[in-house]
Image: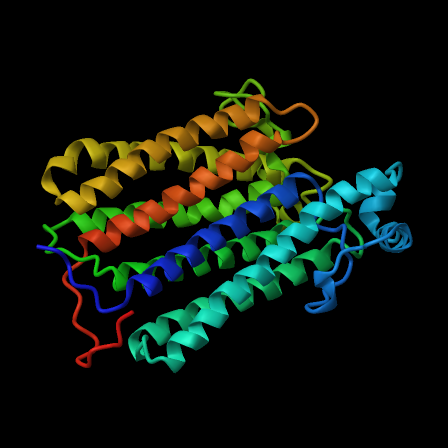
Length: 360
């Protein structure tokens, strides 16, 4: 029997497009970080910022503004205009994508409201996405500002906050889609609880993933399975190093990067083991929809660990762009697959609207 959806096919496609756009935004943010492009544009102009430099005079003006940043003085003082254009492109594309996302999301939203094709139930969920997206954008600008004062790069903790808010926005969109697609089931005892445990570990891992990126912790221990020849770095075994100053001054001492990478590795092993165990132990005890998402999670987590290892081993002077980007993308898809797995196992959701919405 074909499932009868409350909302139109157009609305469902629109929501899926929004999710894909959000994923693209996070990945573009990762590329911007890996290419060192995030500080290339020193201002945030919502309207005029849509137009990039169009002639040599405009480019030289933008380049002069960049020359005033700590990143230029401490890292890129030998940059040519051509090199500046490269990093400018990625930051500009990153910001342009945000604007495109806003247009693609907001204009149809208004149209659907006027045509009364969405009800209060969906409006509330979409407003949460909008609020979280706004917070993400605000945290992003605060993050950029942190790299325009003293450090030649953004603050790792502010980057992590920006990243987590972006993940929360995607999570809110996934919840919205799961509700619209009526993902539900009569779960057997323990299934959703185990997925919640997996999600809890994964959430903590996301925090350390953000810190890994912000501290460039991968550059300190670019070996596997050991960390420069040892399982636990010696800097972590010295009790005197466990101070808050060493966590904040991660630019000048290796303690924080060592701790972050060590925990990131351990969490990866735990998440891999839990996912593999759940797949092989429970795959014959969940319904068809859930087994699909469980299989996706299983494949993604194995590939993700492989990409993490390859990212480390391919490090030369910096994080390899292709492996680093794929590592972030697959990790994000794994989180999304876990969320859809959870929603496909949850108890039957209630019918939220008794009135029939316009179709078409």
